[in-house]
Length: 378
Image 1: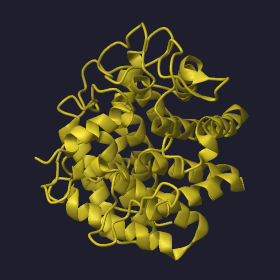
Image 2: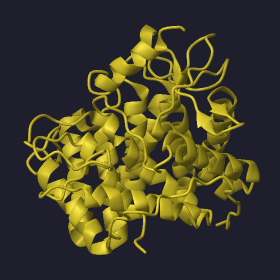
Image 3: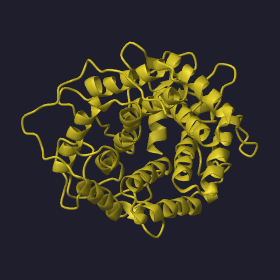
Image 4: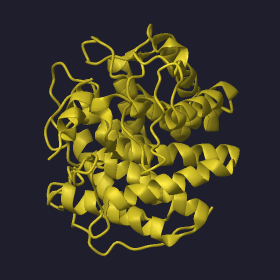
């Protein structure tokens, strides 16, 4: 809910082998380099995260390490992604079981993934994060229930719901995707537009249904026109009616822009997509991360999860598009974060400082273990 309030305030008017280069890198500091993390560390990190935040009875994640509350609905999909990545990295059956367990937790908690329940699903992007993760679960397990829900969730967001009474996130007149269906939610945010492209491309890769590719191309084109600064790779937060683009930067918006561009490039071979992905990653690294090279973080509730989302998409640029120049920077971030872990093997969103030893929010503990599941050690 905090994320929603944050955006409402902002909305007040005011198999291709890709190639490319990065010639504007910020040098990673050499003195006082932390120890290099290992594959064992990566497993310890995700296991510690689950031990301290996963509710085995509810089969979803607590809000805090003292096992209180339930983490925000949209973030549960991101933790699910982390578990899927742990399974892909290790092939350990315990993570495969956890994939199905978390699905069941969401099924029980969120009205059996009833997309027409506008109490549980009260904003479009909350649905779309789950649409993406459900499709990924299908890719891993080939369990049809995941794909069916992903398809129906995408349809609900795009076309609307006769039960809820909305006409959908897609604006057929002016283009782009609306953030929500209520009057005060009619801005077009990066957090729905780029995830829509990712979801459409993931479903296209599974089903080969051409309409998904068409939708992905259209929404990406609108997003790049309205939300992307082609000079430096900055992704704006939202466009509200006729107001100028709000250029507040968020790591997760950079992330989904990168992921969307990579997926479109892999399918089409159009190098403009690759160039956009590299530009957005360079901006995150060279501008947003500052001189010390440490990924930035936000102080608001739920915003600590942004690095976990970045992990999900930057790895696609690195691995799918042969862009290994980002590995050293990301390993440096992981090494700093892991060196500052506490006795519980938990890490904090600010990789430069020791992890607080008391109560920790799940959002703020997610970034480093998420990176460790996808970035390989040296």
